[in-house]
Image 1 (cartoon, protein in one colour):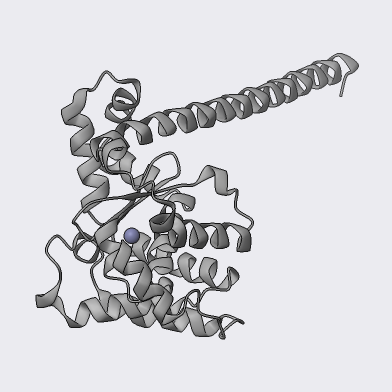
Image 2 (cartoon, rainbow, N blue to C red):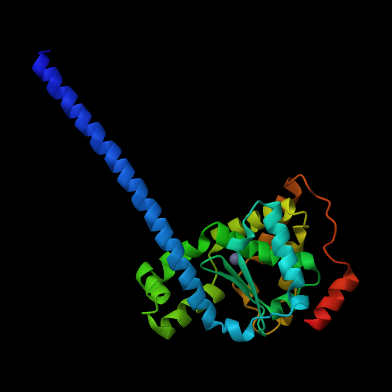
Length: 265
Ligand SMILES: [Zn+2]
């Protein structure tokens, strides 16, 4: 091979390497920027959607009513090395049995859902399940699939109007994520709860009780109608719970304490 040809080849090789490196850097910074932008938009979107549920007006601020919700959330965060500041769990005074996650790390619980929980472990199961939807990025996937980026950005920026926000809020509050993502959220919830020292069978017990009393479900029991296949889920939750190391748990509250809490809710 002649020297000139070798130099040309080295030159071309160097240029290709430079393009690849620059491409890598640009791609990386563009991705980071997009993530930050999406995070910011998600926070704004979450705030806009919370307004739909009249959060300010209906948000429970009574520390006694909030105590188990906050205690469970903190325990889950501590046991799983999660930054609790990134999670915002809201208790809203609403007569519907519902709980759901919104963008921006928001988890919404309605008081009527708390009221059907016979112990704190059942409530912890619902909270852990919704935290799993947040942490596993299910909300973003659902938004992309069912809403689309332009409407989501429009609501976050305030240009899409109130009706769009109401529709998206309704989608996130009253429709399922689909069997696969729901199963993923259940499985992750069991891990979160076990790591936090909370009996994960509470979630199975709540679903089992509701599945057995379909006709007696309280009016507006959205959380159970948007989370179908309860028998299959109960089996999977119990199996997962048994597969983990920790199978003995201290109750979060005594029966009497929980009864007193529900009375003042
Ligand atoms: Zn779910």
